[in-house]
Image (cartoon, rainbow, N blue to C red; front, side, top):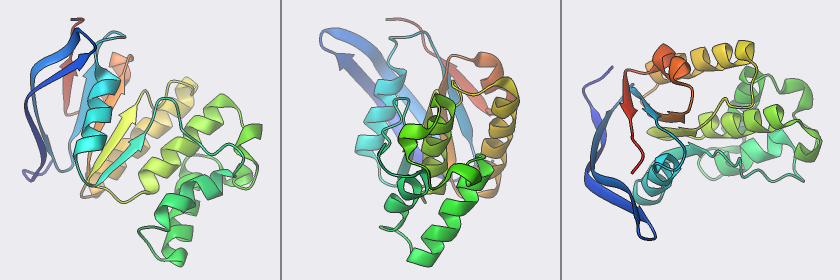
Length: 191
């Protein structure tokens, strides 16, 4: 892990209506660091990720609700955001690499409507990993995968962050999986 600070959040308070989700929340995120957030439902995990994505630059986000363009193919879902940042040839190479890593090469030109829930989740992951950013946000990223695929994708995540100039913030209900890849785990309690 690097000692290069990527993001710093100090004394953040987040509310949902009258309900306080986080109060005086402080977090420093360093390059090559994977931070896990473990907490019960309704404690503000996704709200925190949304806040970060809306208030910080250079963020890539694998949403829990996927946000795919279902009429488009996995390839099109991954390459569209890349074409705004990279040349067409670089975007194509990155899209194909990540679709392959997330075991979607044989389905890359199908409509996303025809994919299973687990396959759709992997399209979302391929899109997030392919997009160049300093911080990767993963919201329940492997919840629709069987244990063998979870293990593989946890390792992909760990290796990617280790070799990149990025950091990762991962939210999960599965503490055992967080323990396998995270440098630090924050446990949030219900408000």
